[in-house]
Amino acid sequence: MGLFTKEIAIDLGTANTIIIYNDKVVVDEPSIVAIERSSGKIIAVGKKAQMMHGKTHENIKTIRPLRGGVIADFQAAEHMIRELIKMIELRKSWFPPALKMVICIPSGITEVEERAVKDSAEQAGAKEVRLIHEPMAAAIGIGIDVLEPVGNMVIDIGGGTSEIAVIALGGIVNNKSIRIAGDEFNADIEEYMRKQHNINVGERTAERIKIEVGAALSDIDNPPPDYPVHGRDLLTGIPKEVIVNHAEIAHSLDKSVAKIEAAVLNALEMTPPELASDIFETGIYLTGGGALLRGLDKRIHLKTKLKVHVAEDPLRAVARGTGIALKNFDKFTFLIK
Image 1 (cartoon, rainbow, N blue to C red):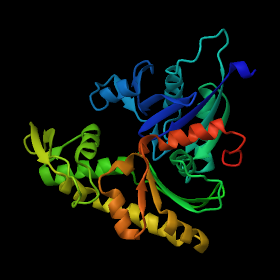
Image 2: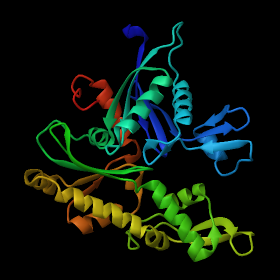
Image 3: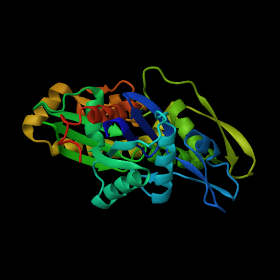
Image 4: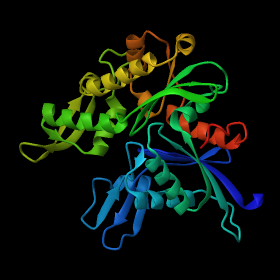
């Protein structure tokens, strides 16, 4: 049966879903689906659905099936996984291949939420599903040898959750999972634009602002140029333009970043002393889309006085780790549920 078994690794994220097949990233799409209300038919998935987000008429709705790292809409999640798997160019054969999947999940989710991920994958055609925790996958993806008796701290800031974990001997020693991450940053930016500039912006525009001028500190080394934002004036209802800079956005994100800092300190407090001395040597590793926020590494360094390393290509670190775990299934058996 080996001929007909295809192994795929999925990083099922709140914001983006990445699929790895044959050691290559074959799908990297936003986790969003567009559905026709009258018939319930799927119109678009991923980038195409993202283009429609916030611009639909009443017969089309866009759904983000995952919220806070877990499945919020079971049916939409199943459709999305199925459509994204179809995007992989699996070799055409007479028999549909049996899919063996490793999917990564937040470390703080409940058994019911875990079950929902497994069920969605099975409904989408998986014969065997294994789950791996995000911080563990991130650590493997960065290149840390997780099986060594050395403590490493990984902070994975995704779209729905921020995962802070101390890893040693192939297991998570302690972890903190908080639902403050990219989505929360976007909501902060939307609120700030409303209160300070009297302008109403949508989720996509907030995301754009975060990418263009987002920062965790107002004092950063090479600040990005100011960014023009278009939205609806709350007083007149007429579209208008406002120029924002990184210092304003740093101010708007301050409270959320402070909560992540508090969670990091809390995780450090719970770390056994021998592992704490290892972390002093190795430092903290930042992965996930949130790691790209300008000045975040500096801010965590100022708070903890520890070295902070940002992973290269932090957006795909978790997916890479999931792919490596899938390839070395036997070596990492006790990591994967």
